[in-house]
Length: 254
Image 1: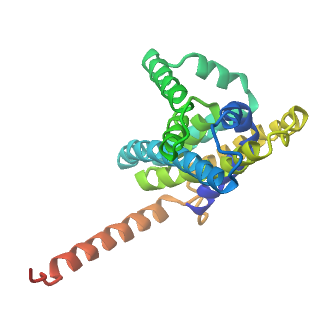
Image 2: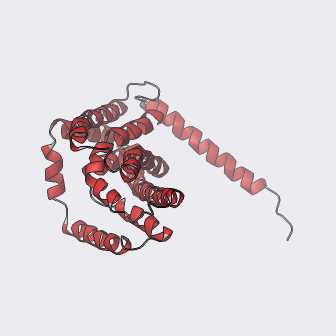
Image 3: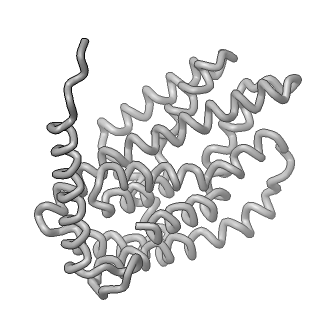
């Protein structure tokens, strides 16, 4: 899974420019205390920490769904299919726009409520408001986040899905932190240049998922069915040992 987590970090790091374009305007209007750098740092840490936490909750739910697919014996196939989807999105960026344009009505209404909530908290300067703003921002629609969600689903594990999304969120953080501190750092010309790297990052992540789904028996990169079965047996043995320890632990006297 280390390779998959690194792919999430890479997707986040190279996707920072996209995030600056999408979430940068929000980062610029955050009601941070620019006269107190210490307080401003805490405000930004709360904001981005909550945003990463929101990604983690999405990854957790997607991981549960992926685990159901794993139990049905579809994990490798799902990884292969989603990897191909990522590569197609990288090769044909217009596909992403069509996906965003066809979002279901209930999701659009949900996003509307999130934006309304963010407008309310943007008028406040308490630490709590920065945490809420960051958490709400994590659920705003974004093509790059959708791709990361595909990766979280393909992990086939709630905790691995959560970690995948949080690592992705961590990768997007440096540029968003800097744009708040140094508003003039990211010029339009620089963003346009760096923006060209995003399809390569998406294609690379997609390729990793394709390899993972091919069962090539390559450690970390493309584990075969035998390796996955060994991992599951180890996990089951570990759980049994923990259960035995809990049952044999002496009861503490009140």
